[in-house]
Length: 141
Ligand SMILES: [Cu+2]
Image (cartoon, rainbow, N blue to C red; front, side, top):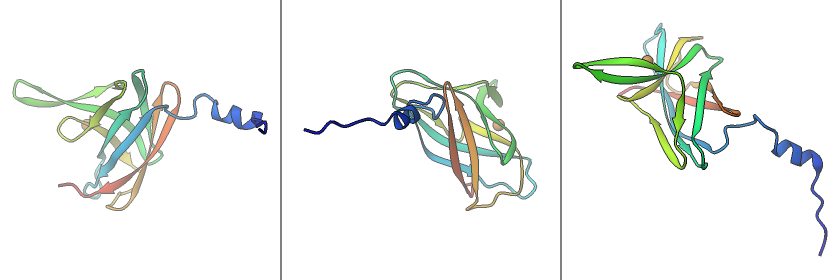
């Protein structure tokens, strides 16, 4: 039997805090194409938490937009209102769907007109860590 030495450097890298949103899996991420000159775009994704504790996403940003907000649609008195959520919580071993008619990522002031096939970069800030996403732009409907 050989003795295997663990390299200190590699171990330190693996345990480095704040590296990624541990347990967060993102699928079906996409941003909907908007008419040229649109000042806001909407993004959708399915977030899954493979961990044992709630996963909280405190904010998001993007080099491609001036701001990113978490929005929910709330029906009240027959009207649909858009409200801003200060954070997103993905339950342990559960899923949070950011999907049309319920929630979206609201993306403000795009740096350019994004067309189908383009890619948008979004960074999610968890506690701890960040996760960088690349979301393809797709046609609506
Ligand atoms: Cu919105």
